[in-house]
Amino acid sequence: MAYSGAAPWCSRTAFADSGYSSGDVNNDGQINATDCSLILESYSSTSRGFNSPLAGGMKLAADVNKDGRIDSVDASLVTAYYTSGRNSGMDDFLASRYSSMQTVTYGEYGGFSFSEIEASAVRPEITLSINKGSAGVVVSPEESAGKKLTCTVNISGAARKYCSAGIHLYYDARLGLDKDDLRTFGQFGNAANGLRCWSESDYSAPKNGMKSIFLSTAGGDDSGTDGELFTFSFKIPSGCAPGTVFPFDIKYEDGDLFVNNACDREGCLMQAYTFTKGIKNWLNPLYIPESDTARCIALNYMDRGYDGYAAIADSGVSITTTIPRATTAPATTTTSTAKAPVVFSEADIKDSQYFDKGLVPEDSPVKPELSITVDGTEKGKVFDAADIAGKTLKCSLRVSGAEGKYSASGLHVRFDKRLSIVPASNGAPATYGDAVSELNNRCIADAENGSMKGIFFSSFAEENAGRDGTMWEFTLKVPENARSGDVYPFDIVYVASEDAEDMFFDSSFGKNGKLMNAYTFMYGIYNQRYNCNFKPSAADAEDCSALGRLAGYYDGYIAIAGDAPAVSGDTNLDGNVSIADAVAILQYIGNKDKYPLSDTAKANADVSGKGDGITPNDALTIQKVDAGLIKASDLPLSG
Image (tube, rainbow, N blue to C red):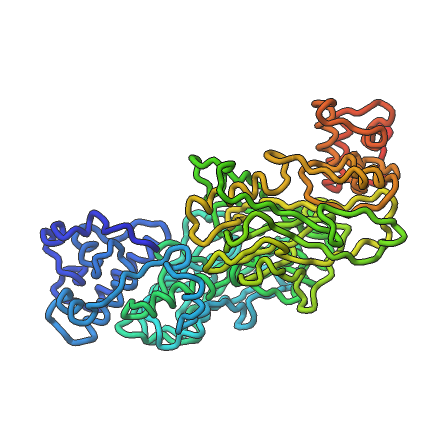
């Protein structure tokens, strides 16, 4: 919430000509609870994207601290004034009591460094509980239709430290509020007993599958306590398929607040902590119990940035899962007979919010390169099937060319889904290496995406303490049925969604950081658009013939010596039949010189009308296999 200056309507000249007095919103000659309520009503409306119900002089009077916004800070100041018993006027009151009042700001990290936020004297946490229990609940399909549940917003770690709050809570738009009335759909709890409160529910069209509730509080002193802030009831609609997930999200939006009465440094730090580490997000992901994911597979793939959920158990049946996002993206619907797949958005780095169109990444003064090692060998290694089947291998993600130049990173590494992650002793999918030992680190296993699965790695720090060398180490197990000619590729990919983007940045996030970030994902990894030049060593390609046809956008491999056996449909000779094989067929048809196929690949590709050569029907048939309409074991088709 960075203020860019006062709004035009709050100029001192306009205020002097309005006939209104600061704080006296209804211009009745008194500053009291009615004025406070009018301010909160305006704040609730504008925070949900609607126009303020105030106009003209009322808006001028409502902006008590003259910062260009009407929010719960103004309401708190009005409350403090009328409870003080003073009648000297709002401006004199503010001058005497709040002479050192700071502007309440909240940028990406509230204008503070991570170390400052970590050192905050007040560390609030805002959490959700469903039916007064944990953050989520899974119900059986039989009892789900019309089932009534409650959602409670809880606050801890901030007793007697806050008064002004503005919080957005999103809920799945398919859920029905128990009472369709702006004033009776929920109620504030004990945490807000000493505060004036206002809640509004958004009854406009759903925003990307979600609707919102806006909660605001104000007080004359820091009388907000820990406990239950707000509770509302909802009903699960009828006709929802097993595996359906209804997420909830506490999400910071521009203008949201959580500060003390003085709006001093402690209050600003408290606010920064609340919206960075006190709600669920990429810094503080949601924990979902295994007991819940066992009952509803789709929960494995729910964004851990959500704060709660209600889900319908799937019991292993066909799943149709719709999980909306509380952002600008439309809801994503997927269908599966086993698991709800995650769709990754492999956006172009030039579409990144971090990329300035005037930059030339090739001119970056820092040119990082990311690479994979397998069993200590750069790029990859070839093994004999008898030696490696069912065994584990140490792999690592390494960086070079960035010594002392980076602090924040978010990186996706994918590998063939036939490989299994062997967790570290602490249960994590990987351990951090020397290159990021001075940074804050976390990692999480990714869901399957086509023929690949992987791990997401992130690091951050206040200073550029990242070094060259091993960033992360992880252990993978080769399948027991590994056979001669198998190739298990690795891929370092750039992933962007409406919620987050991969990154490789310095601590300043300035021009050189943007250049370095762009260079890393354009030229510092292998990819289809900018750097499709990956090649295994000549010796490895000789030992495993399939490596000679490994795509140039991969970044590493585990390979088994020998020739790959013929597998109908396996055009790219990776041992799987997937959408990648359909792409290989279409590329070959479009440009045989640029995308040649070996004799084995051609034989595998001819799956529709065997013997009629490679045609678009072969690609269509493989697409049907990928969609689950045809079994791979049925290939090739005779007609």
